[in-house]
Length: 152
Image 1 (spheres, rainbow, N blue to C red):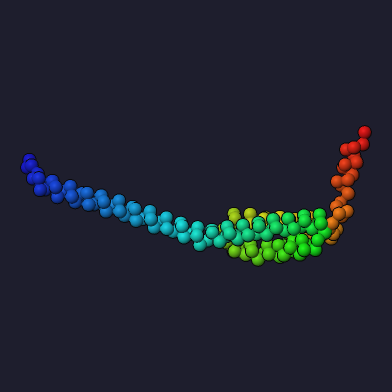
Image 2 (image 1 turned 60 degrees about the horizontal axis):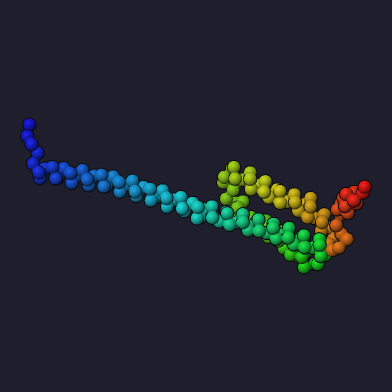
């Protein structure tokens, strides 16, 4: 059996090392490509939908805060601010609804969220606005509970 020369061993090692480096480079390039695709999805689809959801939640929180302020004070500015917040909640959710429409599981959650918000407006907020605001407009449950608690 013939012994390999030093030159032949070095060339074989160099070719082998080059092939390994090329293979590792291809794996790295593929990983960078996949990461870039994922970041694009997050920044172009999920980011705007998340922002839209945050803005809807902020509008609903503003509506609740302004409604509470109106029922306590009876000031018309709070009622106007409440109505403004409610009117903003649906247009602010448009991006979220468009994104959710292409994702069935998320779509059902988004629909439930908007249905819950509409139910809150219909079942709680609208009756509170119809009752009016300011001292003496609260429902009698709190005073009747207090009188029951103080009864011996």
